[in-house]
Image (tube, rainbow over the protein chains, first blue to last red):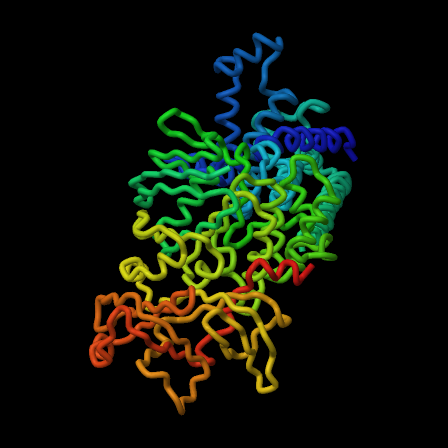
Length: 222
Length: 366
């Protein structure tokens, strides 16, 4: 059992969720409330990672983050090491790759709030910030929760893109999914089996918690 | 604290209106759906900004496109009751009311909920309340904002008829407590006549007629604009006694009226809506007639309508009764202004929702 790989995966998933929560609130809210030219294009771009093969996506990220790219050069300049094949690079790739899983459900969550309810909030004297905190977030919560759980679970299981952008450096970029692959390659089926079971248990646990929480939200709204 | 409104726009709805509502006054904007009346309300609230507009309360502008002033809704002291109430579903009635307060005050929320007859329901969520109760929470929430202008957008359209009658009475009673200008948007002329002091008839974004409710309702042109055949007057009366046969005797300045049961203790003051097309005009005081209500008076005016009808205006005591009859009948009876005539009204022609309770009922309820 490769505990290091499991904790790395959990750490990666936690960072991805932490970064995507505010992003999904802002982007989801923006896409839900505003009709503008090019909205279809923005939505399509957000959805792109869902349909592209992870290897294709990973390839472009590898090129985009590489030493010769502007982003890669910038990173090298400021942090003294390159972005690809590091944990930071993995986080950036994971955030981009999870955009559809985070933004889509969040957008649906905000869309479910009746326009009049938001208007009522402002007629009640609530500033946009206060309206977000007191009315919109509590009502969009089930959507945001779904977004975060999908992101978390999806990050734990992602394989192709991690391999492309991160490689398989123990303690740095070797996630549990990669570790399982390595064990299978080296005919260590027992370890692969244990790790797969742990991954199944973790995923089930996450989903069970979500269901329990959203049932509570449902009762609260009922 | 008068409310002044001026708005002009081309799209999405053509709009060209200007009006003023005094403190404590209730103005009804009456018109068909799509006439622009809700857009006017949204302009006052700040939810919509027309191309050219000015909204001011007590001389202080909330919106003045000429001067580049626009206060967003949350910076206007405005209470808006939405057509479908738009309550916050995750909050209790009390929390909904407190959400509109500058500083949440549960005791004050209870007081306002009592005012709208929601005593004991403070901890219910909107989903656990009936339509009528939700409407009352919406009114309470609007009042909790301590509004300088109270706006009601078709607030009675989503409840059943019995509840609507009850809510009408409550709004009339509540008005004794309201010092701010009130604007009611409605497509229901009966409702406007029961509740409003003044009416503005909105047609294609324009005010086609504005005036006291009585004046607008007697104006043939305004009624044509509203496509209304049901002209009526409001006659003040007092409940005298409930008779064993199911009728209620009311005393009016014009003499006794017998109507199907009107709820309320003897002494309760009401206003009865008398439909012009239900009134028969007779030269001689009729005898041997089944109709119970005969009001004698003097003809003041005879106004021809667009079709074969005329509107006979009669002074009965200090009040005016309208009768819509055919031109042929008026000619046959040779009715002229100054003549004495008798207006006859069937008891059963006054529906229950045509009786409005005057603010006097507030004391009766207390």
